[in-house]
Image (tube, rainbow, N blue to C red; front, side, top):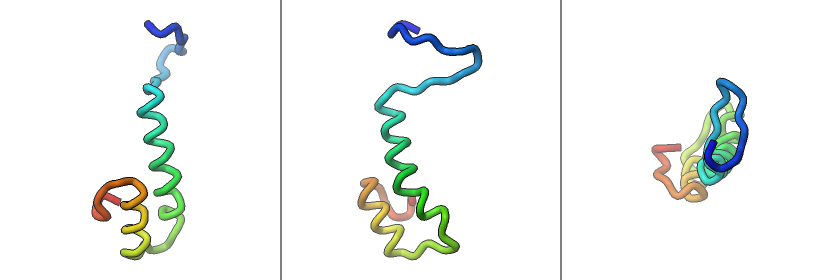
Length: 57
C-alpha cells in the first residue's frame, strides 16, 4: 500500500475514518440487536446518536 502498511493476501483494509464510523455504529446498534424487540424510543435515541433517521436504525 502507498501508506506503508503491509496487508496479507486477501485481507481488506478500511481507512481509519471509515473504521471509526463502523465502530461507532456497532456500539449503538449492538445493544439493540440483542433485544427481542426494539421500540420506537430506542430507535429514536439510536438515530439521534448516529445522526440518521430512526427508520434507518
